[in-house]
Length: 82
Image (cartoon, rainbow, N blue to C red; front, side, top):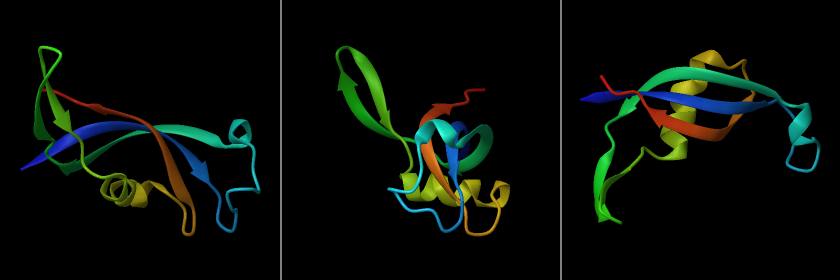
């Protein structure tokens, strides 16, 4: 099965390295993608917690929304219930 996630990320342009930009200068986007289901991590502080898919999987799911050569810098991931 798969789950829908709302991901907020910044777009790192093609050819730009980690020392070549200021985070405030990057475009910020929010998109909804489908990825694998979260896995239960157990009860922590009285609440059931879940592991999200890896950043690599979520980044690959964002691929169709990105121009060739650009990369996402994932800032926030929310599970869309329902």
